Amino acid sequence: EKAGVANQDLIDISFRGTDLFFMNQFREAEELFQQHDKDDAYPAVALGLIWGVKGMMTFERSDIQTALKKLQHAVDLCRKHRKSMGWVESWMNATGAMAQMNTHQLHAELIAAEAVLFRAILTFLEGDSFGNFLRGGFDIKSSNGAYKCMWKMLQKHGEELEDGVDAHWLTGVQLGCGIFNVMISMLPPRILRLAQFIGFEGDRDIGLGLLQECSELDGLRSAMGSLTLLAYHSYMGPLFEFNDYDIGKAQVLCSMFLKKYPNSIIFKFYEGRIAYVQNKFPVAVSVYEETLAIPHDPMWDQLLHICWWELIWCYSGTSDWKKCAHYALQLKENNTWSPVVFTYLHAAHLYVDEGATDRVRELMDSIPAKKQTIAGKSIPLEKFMVRKVRKFQEQGSFLMLPQLELAYIWQGLKFMPSFDSALELVRAELKALREQGAAEGEKKTKKGQNGGRILADDYCLALLFEAVLLMHLERYDESEETFQLLFANEKRLVLDHYIAPYGHYEHGKMYARSGKHDKARAEFKNAVNNYTKYSNESRLHFLVQSQLGNERIE
Image (cartoon, rainbow, N blue to C red; front, side, top):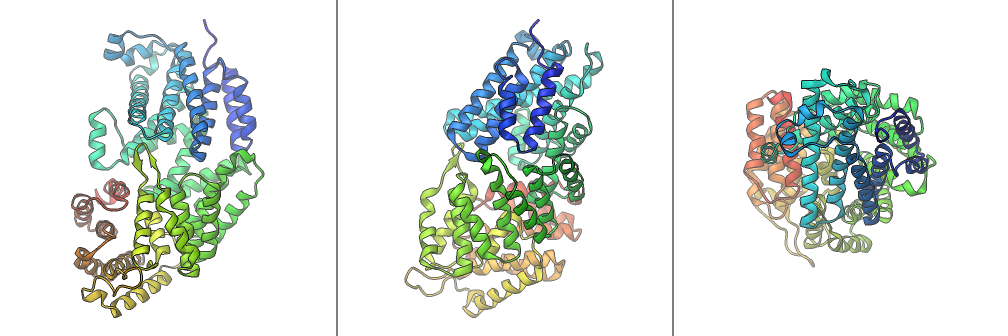
């Protein structure tokens, strides 16, 4: 018999490599797995994951291709250990056939599913050809099918397995099924129905439950289960506005990791993120700056760039526009993920700090040519920013409150030290707009050298901000009045058409907060069903799905 896929030596190597990675010893982890990846699937898939993470950070085609080769090698190694099944058996009784597998064959199935899933993600990033789109889609379906089969087998035949179920395999199945359930449950209704039609299933409660079970066992993937929960409760939950994220649980998980890996860049980042979500901006800034000073392999500098990204929003919360511009510039000069986003962030915050200088205009003018695509699609945030550049140019180098608009688009104006201060700023703009005739039907000011200011759009945007801030302050009657004023003016919008559907979405949130569930549901459906072809449309659909899935409006 061939050497086992899951012998204890390989499991120990995987544990050791994971520890090295979490302790910022990235090169050492890579070298450890390289010593064993030629003939063994666990080190091979781990090496593919390391290269894949590197490729996702750098967007370098060579890194992504290296990762794809490593992952394919892992799949090839798994084939040597997987139990061969006939076509009829695999189609009619795959779970029964899997129940006859030994431990090493089961681990081969699991590793192959992991490798194929990550290969799909990297295939989408590698290029935007139709062939890549098809290959990536097929791989995701294949991986999901494998995880579902393993889970069904475990439920039906778990007690019949000859060698029993070890925690290393079980945590892998729980991790994969948990992630698939959570991610699929986030899909907008139209996409979700299609996904269910072709065999995908998604239930957020089931997914989070599986991840919790995974984290509580002493298995090889338990740490990843805990890390996924940490990411959900501190990042995904607040970002997509789920009502079941638990920042207290995130703190417990983060403290547990930091006790074992006190200088881990990964977990120090989450420590800062938790402070940010709690509106403790000085604490978050301190943690992120400590993280940036941690010694690490220069080849992994990009891992720290997410701290720069978060520092932009921390300093935005404290109105330090110069610092925002500084960290956006660091990303612009050192990170290749999205030149459009980083250049616009730098230019917009410079504009707020210094005004429409020649440097700001030069930066704005350079942005449209930087736009890129992933899997054949433009990046929604890039499209939004290119449109804002167009508006800046058409209005004679003017934008209204771009710092609040950026904070709203990214985080929904949820995280700031003082809603009252932001409301005061917005109301000052509204007063000025009304003095220029924005409330009386004027769409534009008189044309200047490069065009007139689009009053209608700015007026509606300021009304949206006012309504949202009043909602956060729980001044619901005033918020309702402002929303109605916004909706009475929405047909006057010239460029910023996203304001109307996002307004109805926020109106639905206000209803949900005040216990008017039927009205909330109607507004959410209004936002997605009656508007189309506006900036960040897909993001709004995800946000609506998260609200419809929240218990408070069921």
